[in-house]
Amino acid sequence: MAGYIEDRWLKKRPNPATGKRERTALWGKGKRYKVAGIPGVRSRSFHASGDAKIWLAQATTKKSEGRFVDPRDGQILLEDYIVQKWWPSAAYPVSSRASVKSRVWRHIIPYLGHLQLLEIDYEALKEWKADLLTRVGVTSAQAIWAHLSTILETARKAKRIVENPCREHSELKPTPEEGRKAKAWSKETVDAIRAGLADRYRVMVDLGVGLGLRQGEALGLAAEDFDWDAEEVFIQRQLRFDERGRPYFCLPKGKKTRRVPVAPNVAARIRAHIASYPPVQITLPWQDPEEPATEQEAKQRKPRTARLIVLAEKGTPVLPGVFNTSYWKPALEHAGIVQRLDLATLPDVSWRRPAKTYGDTREHGFHCLRHTYASVNLGAGENPVTVSTWMGHATVKITLEVYGHMVPGAVQRGRSAINAWFEPPQKQILPQDSLEAAVARWAADMALVGAGAAVKADMNRQFKKVDFVEEPEVSNGTVGEASSGH
Image 1 (cartoon, helix red, strand yellow):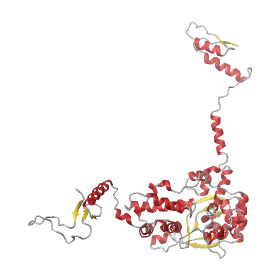
Image 2 (spheres, one colour):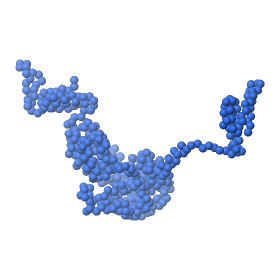
Image 3 (cartoon, one colour):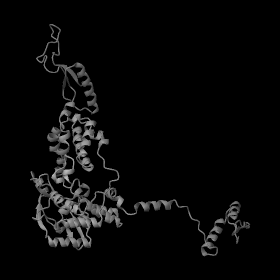
């Protein structure tokens, strides 16, 4: 039988002369009873034999069921596990690593890092979530919860914990308020935001509302991407920055390129911008700014050149953080969407930093221009499948889930269709002397030819103006034609 208990203080076999087991060199040192011999399970020692027997039974059963986890592996602190085990092997895209690391190091390690993996339970998660929601919004809290769940799921797969507490207690997961949907801006609001931007950045609004571009796609758009004759633009790259602030090019989100139609008025604005701020050739690494370590990486990261149409004043790629803080938020203030915070009147909270001059403006980000693009197209009756393609969504399901409420008249059309389905049938009344009435009478006469007397009598009662007469049989056995009186 797999597994056994060894007494470390006494020799296994008794002395032949005395019949007693002699002491070993470990007598009185450490824990006496050692459980060993379970395949794939490290040995473990106990002070009492009873504890050793219980653990042997439990470990053997769980090992046979594939559920065994050595508690000692779960005693590592969460911070140590993240730093030593999880983060070095985390396979996040370069564009996401900075934001993931920031969330983990700012919102997980300082508050849960002192706990062992085994100690992260329902109560620990409940307290952490409550505190988290005092520091960030629900959307950010959802992302941070997802990161913690990923960390603990990796620990579970590594056999350090039995269950992932984030999944086991999924009811604690932060959830957004009911009824929150993507919102679009009015033309007046968009125009006010555009007017509040520096002149060189006003085209960003045109690219967002006119082409439905994401911010990274707008910053990575090049003059050569436009086909003015075909009135379309090829969205084939975005500008991103790694955690060290190094810029690079990569494919749009989801690694999906797409072609988007360019309306004449949008084209006119973009051309006017290009005339005022000529594009500049920018050469950047592809996919990853890190120096390649292999020949294959060198091929994958080979720099590419693009004549970007949106650039900073010095002719360099635009840093999204600088754009958002120094230009976008003041433009929102100019449009009356946000207001500067009076820090002196606010309670002393951890997130109140100079960078938070306007508080949490996440719901008023550049992405709202993209929402507006979807709203305008769907409001004009454009096919959702087409809009989904223009926006670069993975499936039309995403488009409908996010923007379905923007489809005009959708509820009313459905209500009308169901109402028509249940409409009672209407009786058709024809004029007595019309051609249609004559055809109907002829069809009724033909239907009675060869019918039995009972059927004819019944129809005579229904059609009182028609007198159907039974024809006598002829000598050759055929049935004569029926005559009718009107």
